Length: 455
Image (cartoon, rainbow, N blue to C red; front, top):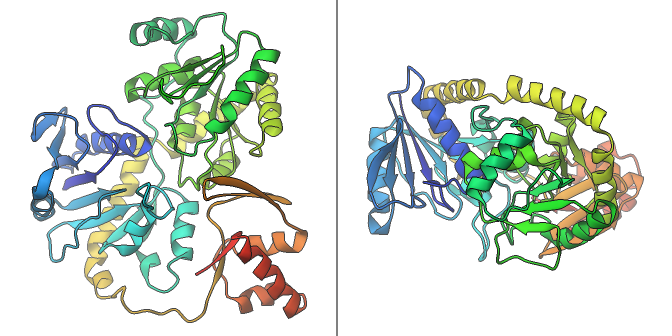
């Protein structure tokens, strides 16, 4: 079997910039070691190398640029058995009757805008033999917005793998010596406590707006505290206990996770998976996060992923609780690492992929015969917004670059739970036994606030 990947941005080689790139490299390495895989290739517009073609370990690289991009992609589609498309900004060409099966990988569940690329619109619009989603949350979003076609028959839910050879716990002594060799001004030493790690890009809606206040509160309670970020030196504010590092290469990330006492992952976006959370746990560090997207589900699966509301009081209270409950956190981490090794190890995930590929190949003709153009929309359906973070009576939405908080009553909570999967007004009414006029008003109120969406 010949397996190829297509990636578009931001950078996959020599540095893996972000979870998408790290996912592709981890899978490619694993596939290249399997007996029934003959060749693994990565095609990308984000290869920072002078060569157009080269081999790195067992992985072949093809750099895409200029107006011959489509030609190179078509050549690979006629040579490979599997084309895995990981495109955010780039629109994959509409290709028919090629040798390979073409599989889209859903990395996030927002639509592309004039300011940023995305994956959701690519998943809906392409001529895919299958779509691989990284979580039940992401799968559910895709199904909720495509109730008008047969796309659900092509979706496979496979989580991202966590490579234990790349992410693992190291002792503070080793970490400090390693970091001193790669970063001259990290501020890390044995006297710093607590160390908080914020491993996110700047201006990516990852909650960096809370950092100045967190720094201030931490410094007052813990004078030797330190916050490490990967926001880059261009992002700065006046705080003596923060160090803004540049982006950290994948092979060095374990040092910063290992030395930290807490990793914070404060995304406002409907995260489809969250690689950061599992990387941190694998390195023995608990995570504090909000409940947007799959982060809510991960906090239910992994005891060492804690969640809080997106306000500074809740954030700081939970940071202190984690720091001052070390025995319980140690138990939570041990259980979380067992779950990672059992359910997210590369061998198990690679097997799931190969099983999916085999199934897709056997069903290709049958699925191709069902046209996505046969519109079957019979009635409008309501579904809870994928951008929602639900804390019971408090719900949060991040829209138009602004975090909004709403209070919902018990009936509205019931509607939200029911609409976790898309429902018609009649289906909602059959479950919520109240006056139809009152139900319509409740739904209209939720829709006007965009807490629920209409398909």
